[in-house]
Image (cartoon, rainbow over the protein chains, first blue to last red):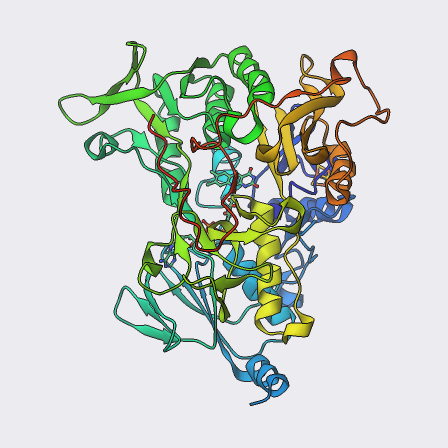
Length: 81
Length: 464
Ligand SMILES: Cc1cc2nc3c(=O)[nH]c(=O)nc-3n(C[C@H](O)[C@H](O)[C@H](O)COP(=O)(O)OP(=O)(O)OC[C@H]3O[C@@H](n4cnc5c(N)ncnc54)[C@H](O)[C@@H]3O)c2cc1C
Ligand code: SF4
C-alpha cells in the first residue's frame, strides 16, 4: 500500500503514530517521519491511521481489499492547502 | 470551431501530453480525469519509474524506515494513460504541436503540460564528481546508491552545502551514529532560505547533534586515491577532511535545456507562465496550449508584487498541477489563478521546520512566539511594513494564522499580543539574508524578476 503525507497540512498530532507505529513515527516533538510503503501486514492499522488523522493529511491507495474495490479507491484527500 | 464547442471537443477526445512523470505530472493527470477529460493522455518521463515521492529520500529512506525504491506515490484515481517511461523529451515544435522524443518518436498534442522539474547540480569539476563515493540526491537511483553506501558504514560523510537537503542528510547520518562534516559557504546552514537569524539556530542544531560544521568555507577540491575512490576534501581555509562519502548538495538546475530552440520563454530560471499556468513564449506572449507546473515553473504572484516566483516546494507542485489541469480543459471564463501561498517543511535533528510565504523577501524578522534559544518558536518576516512570511521550529499549529496575515497583507512589525511572546520578540531585527545578487544554492523560493523573458538575473552555480 502506497501512502504519502501532506506535511504542510500535518499538525503533528501523532494519532497516526499511535495507531500504526510500524508506519508512522514521531522524531522529536512534532516531526512526523513515515514509511511511504506499508506491507499487507500493516494495511489495516495504516487504514485506521488514515481515517483518524484529524486534518486528513494522509493519502493512501489500496486501502480496501483489492478484490472488492475498484483500484485506487480509498480516501482521496486533496493535498492542496 | 467556436470556443465553447472547442472545449467540449477537447474534453471529449482531445490529446493531452504531460512531459515529466513525477509529482506534478501525476497530480495533473488525475485532476484531468477527475474533471471529466476522456480524451487520450500520454505521460512522458525520462526516469524508468512510475511517479515516486522525493521528500522521503532524504528522510525516511536515510533513517532506515523505508527502502529507497519504495516511495511510489499513491494514486488518487485511475488515469488511464499511455506511459512512455525511460525516454526523454528532446524537443518541442510549437507550430506543429508535437513533442520530440529521444527515441525519434514524435507525439502530437492538443494541450501540453510541462512538468520536467529540476535536477541536482553536480560537483562542478567533472573528474572529481566522477570519483567513487561522490553522490548527489535527487532521484530514486541516487537514493539507492547513497543508501547502500551509508549502510556499509562509512568512516565519515562529507556534505557540501547546508541547505535543507544537505542538513537532512547530515541529520540522518548522525541519527545512525555516522561521523559527518558539513561545509557551507555562508556563515550558517539554511541562510539562503531563512536568513542569518534562523541560520544561527540551525548551526547550533548541527553542532549539538555532533555534526562537524564548517561555515564560511569553500570546498576547493576533492581528492581521490589510486583506484578512483574519494579520499579527502580540501577546504579554502587550508584544512583537509578525510572522508569516504561525499554528498554534493548545491541546489538544483531547471530541466529546460530540451526547450532551448522551441521559442518558449524557458531558461535557467525555469519556464515563465502566467497565473493560470499558461507558458509564455520568448517574446513574452502567452501561449494557450502549453501549460507549466511544479519546480520547473516560474509564475507571477499577486501577493508578492507580481514578481515571478520559482518554488522548489512539494505543495506547490501539487497545487499548481491541479490549477494547470483544470485550466487546460476549461474556457477562459472558468479558469482559476494559481494563488497558493508558498509553504514548505523540513524535518531534521528531530525538529519540525516549516515556512509559509516568501522568507527571502524579508527585510526584518521578529520572534513573535517562543524563543530561539529553546528552538521552539515562530519567526515573522516583514517587507515594507507588511507580513511577508513566517517560519516555525516545532510550532506548526500557529502557521495557519500567519498564512492568513500574509494573505491579508497585515502590518509589520507585529504589534498585537501573541501567545508566549518573550522580551526578545518585541522588536524586529534584520533578517540577515545574504546579498540577493549573489545566488545561493540554499533558497527554495527564488524571486526571478518581473518579466517572462527576464534573463538579467542569470543563476550562476554557487562556486563552493
Ligand atoms: C531529497 C529531496 C527532499 C525534498 N524534501 C522536500 C521537503 O521536505 N519539502 C518540500 O516542500 N519539498 C521537498 N522536496 C522538493 C519536492 O520533491 C519537489 O518540489 C517536487 O518533487 C517537485 O515535483 P515536480 O513534479 O515539479 O518535479 P520533479 O519531481 O523534479 O519531476 C520532474 C520529472 O521530470 C523528468 N524530466 C526532466 N526532464 C525531462 C525530459 N526532457 N523528458 C522527460 N522527462 C523529464 C525528471 O526526470 C523527473 O522525473 C525535496 C526534494 C528532494 C530531491
Ligand atoms: S495524524 Fe495526521 S496530523 Fe497527526 S501526525 Fe499523523 S499525519 Fe500528522
